[in-house]
Image 1: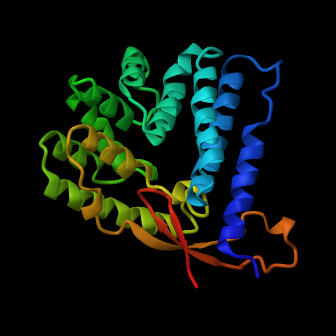
Image 2: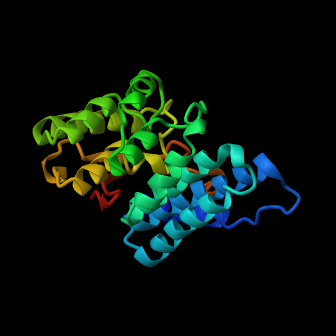
Length: 264
């Protein structure tokens, strides 16, 4: 019967193929920018899946394409340049690169912060990275925490304050609670991250802990709820008609690294 490793490899290859689809020349403006960001999203999925399988060379190549396509999405539609830069921020954060330049670019587009699709966490991360005022963005982040956006987990605004106050104990508790909620969403078939690459890494805790480390606060080893069991479902049952559609493939996942451990 199909294993979780086989399923993850299938998903990785699928994401990589979709991410490499050529953007049609006739697309203009917003449509072209969206096309580039969509490809970047597929490459992010490929990175997460390949990295989980320790296929590091192709994983890093996928991550470089996240940044490449994110940058390419800026020019066609200036009104959504900030959304494209958030994609670049994601790629650089996962790559472990310096985030000062992309944070400066994000802050240059402050006029786009009110875009309904702009996650307020990113302007906050950028502002703190640049040692600029960030508190004016906290009310919007707190409001987003009350909505069903998987990337903005409840407790995010508290965690931001705890990072700036260098309160490691409180931050550990907040991140642990967020990871518990992430697992609840990842295992809920009605959630947008269920059976999706975003279930393998909890973005908000990852980005917050990345920021904390740049400020000398590394509490990753103390965080609870980071390693959990996911029961993967078939992502494309039509491609495997001999396998029951409800077939489940359990795998142990570290929500802060995306690393996996097969279960016997």
